[in-house]
Image (cartoon, rainbow, N blue to C red):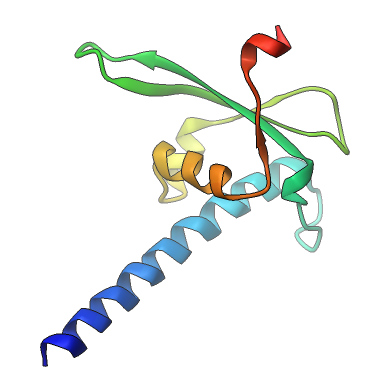
Length: 111
């Protein structure tokens, strides 16, 4: 009985993770495509996060900049409010990008 319950919890966790990843993908896709049928190629994406400190000294995301090298040389900001409205946290969004073929760049190399 316990094993079945554990498997059901795991399935629910995977379902929630898929929901979050789908929301993040939709946000990124919306940034770089006009047609919902187009697909973003993650290996064409470059991104860099900009962090700040909260009042307790904790590190939080201030902004997330992403560019698609096939479309533009300019970075676009992924709105943090849109991230939260998608059901994802900024930590989940960064993990999603880190686990994708997208490339994280050092902002010091850009500016």
